[in-house]
Image (tube, rainbow, N blue to C red):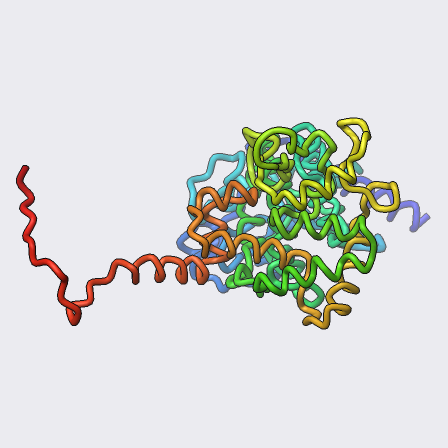
Length: 439
């Protein structure tokens, strides 16, 4: 009998709580607090991961989590007696009105947050799960689908998904915290180079921004990944291996030891400076050697932003390479791949293995990769006086990236040009004719 009375009492108390919460925030008692009530008071609090909790109702609490850089977050908590997890929490989408004025949509005041927490608590007591919204996994999926429509490089999305743990993939985007994203980013540096980490987090940031453009609830939390996914400084200073012309020629020659197909592939990479992903997409029709100096129509990569105006770039090649490619093309249909390996399209893993063996056979440093051929081609053109803009077009990149990655080599080129125009006063000119500026 005692147990029955206790159960009935618990049910009645639960119904009273739900009823009071369901009355709406407008009729609920507003809790006042000197520390959390306004932005000036909250500014004096120390940043920490654990929220500053305050009681709203019996078993219902509101918390304020202060981030060191981004705006603070409001958190709700409900106590469930007898449950395996007695406390369940929920981070409100949006931020506290620490910096911006409250609008009750994406920025909440202390009193507006109380309303949201009470509504959420009522749903928990009714057994209705909170509307968490799309997850990080959803954001990645939507971004990958968008890239497919825009013919972007979906490989970047697959790469970032490999590095995302299940816990983070299942997180609701509206609840993402800058600290957890920063912790994930820092963890990647233990196994990846800083430049690679930056590429991975850039793709995730793009996926989250894409979702935020579609969902205003997600957009309210944009500052979390802006702060948590900041690029690692100095990572752009990559160790680009630049090879002298003689070493490039030796690599091409040594590649012949591993078959004509591989020799031909390395030869194209060395002369054009194109990426492997571009070279393997060459079709028979892209070889232009019937009229005039031989050229090759190199497919543009899927790197960069926006829609590229041109799908191919015409690059000059030597007659010797053109003749070898024409031999490889034979009488095959125009749309078939120009470069093959044992009659099949090239696979990246096979190419990397063969190039590593080529470097070793040539007696060169193991730090040399096939990408060194691209770096060397860019620097060769820069130091030969080819305008930076043309070098960028030839290598399917931007002048900004050239200046960022190859600034030292551009400086060498600028030094040579400027030095040729220096006035040496120790050597008087042969003529002392004064030219007037007047017509």
